[in-house]
Amino acid sequence: MADTARLNLPLIAPEQAQKHITHNEAITALDALVQLVVEARDLTAPPAEPVAGQSFIIGAAASGAWTGRDGELASWTGAGWRYATPAEGWRLWDRASAGIFVFQGGKWTALLATLGALQNLPLLGVNTSADANNRLAVRANAVLLTGLESGAGGSGDIRLVLNRETGTDTATFVFQSGFSGRAEIGLAGNDDFAFKVSPDGSAFFTGMTIDKDNGFVTFNQLFGSAPSYPTIAGGVLHVATSYAIPAPESGTAATIDTITGGFDGAVLILTGTFGNTLTFADGAGNLKLGAARVLNNFEDSLMLVKRGGDWIELAFASNG
Image 1 (cartoon, rainbow, N blue to C red):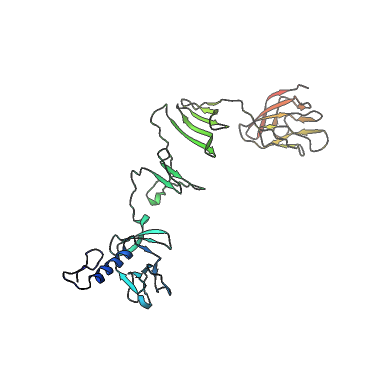
Image 2: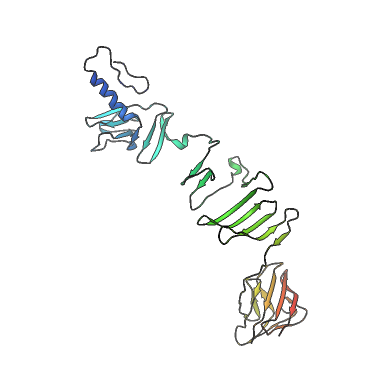
């Protein structure tokens, strides 16, 4: 009796008696091999109670009814086990690992591992669906892009490039809440680098722009610092923001000779409060002032810049 070349299905011979037996054998084999699904791979012993239609890839050193059948496909028909030897290119769905595998080079390999370079994909969605507008879509809690190390043939660097067609097009990052834009940074219709925010995803307000020609920074709105309310301790005032409203550690008066915090080039604005008298000592600690400066009113102010370890006076106003 002859068999087919690829799946070894039995063929009906001319003038064969009981043709239905050969036909049923072929149909049973097709049912097992076409759209191949296995319950598990590399199983070494037959299950105690197999269900008709279940198939398994037999592992190494198999035992029981599978002895000597290593690597074969075993399918249970209800009447017994039927076996098939995988051929190059066979594909299967493995229920246990929920993956597609290809028989390649004498072993079953995950389909993704058999793929080479992926080029010119029209759409790619990772854990979500891509569309004509978002041809690459990723749904995840984190995304990692890392440079290729020099030891692996790279340089260790990484650069993410956004390229637009012309200078009047847009190349920006947009940050959203509930898919409604709240912030945008980048090149928005010109070559200046802009920082924008929006309360509703429709109207955007530019907060800062960096000029393309000279790097000059323009603040498009008023800017300032959140006020802080540090307490003076032992003549030392520690500042954390560029606008501070100090208070004595106890009582209603204090003398300050040292300011800590800030960085070289930082500008600090100090204002007084009604009922407190704050004296900033010139030449003591790290204060370099035009004279001792007293803040004892809500409208009094002292502006300083930090240079090295010293705070140098820029302006003083006594408005009490």
